[in-house]
Image (cartoon, rainbow, N blue to C red; front, side, top):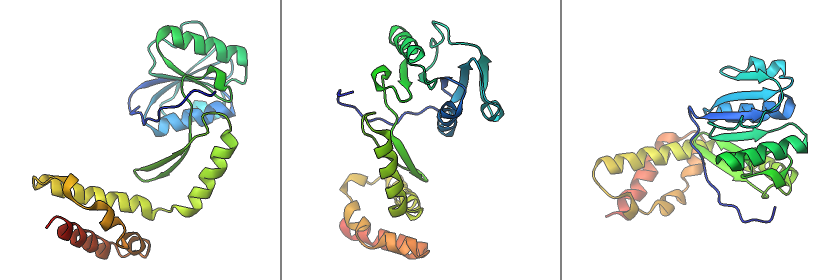
Length: 209
């Protein structure tokens, strides 16, 4: 797939999503959708016990039928059968539904990046579907470099941003980059959160003076 990609983060909480397939790969897709808060339904001739046990998941144990994609926000097919992938993808194009086919980039309206979460921080690595192994390899390298302190940094800065907005001040006039380069992350990493907050406030105060 050589088409240029447009990266987005979707809000799926409560949105109906369909997974076609009931095996190990489908399970991974279901779990990722559940993590995003989606309402997940599964269609497959055989649905694994692991998928059946996932909270909130519903399923139909049967082959995919034309028109099954209607009414869903997103569809992921993980069957390993390219004919099924193609049928689901074309069905999605007809109904205006975005379809991803696992390991079949020719039948994808969108691709799924390798993801790294640290609290509200989300990093995504994509190879446009051409090499998922490279994306996963790079994500694992990032996991070693980017620890939980980065999630705590996001929370600290977000809290300060809301405080500034509550005071009726513009957050655009503050030198956030100077504050982030001030050694805050190292303080958080050492568990010195109060000191990190004080340093953040001091930097922001001086930058907006």
